[in-house]
Length: 221
Image (tube, rainbow, N blue to C red; front, side, top):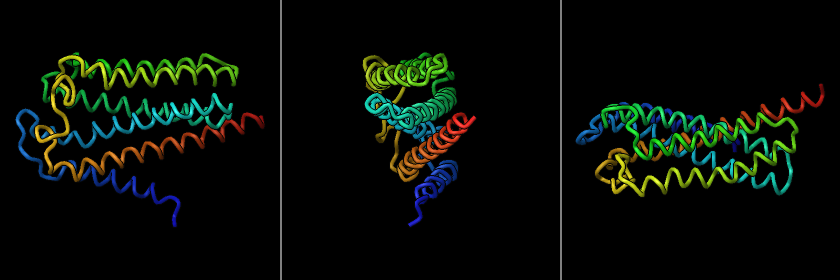
């Protein structure tokens, strides 16, 4: 069996979600109207971010237990890709908010929490780049990453639920039900979630292999 089958699946699912996301009929919903199509892009990108940051968290723990350089590389590259998808999630969310809430950034608790969470992870990258000694950099950044992950969870999933929010699924505002997630959307939404997660995994593996090659070349030179 072709070991790259999941990459083919990722490509098919993402292409399907893009084409179907724009072309499939969507039910008329008050306020949301045609902007509901963004659910096939905005939400799956956040799922991809969360999965990649979870992978980064796991590999940071593994690095502290093993001091294996490959675990450190996987931790940082997963975080890099997670941040990229987090930024894409913020951008697509801001576009959606512009047409449904009236402005791109309305200081909604979920928006603010997401931005802070990304800043926490950007600080992780700054910390890594500020340390030159390899093992010291790996251990300190791994400890930071392990603490950054629960902070991200609190910012994205706990604090927004404790206050009023325009964002679905927070502050009593329902999410993923008939009020904002009609059954007609689900055949596109779920493949989109899986597709973007697989694409983020693919990007991470490419970046990881590139970093390994660069490290070997540095050792030779």
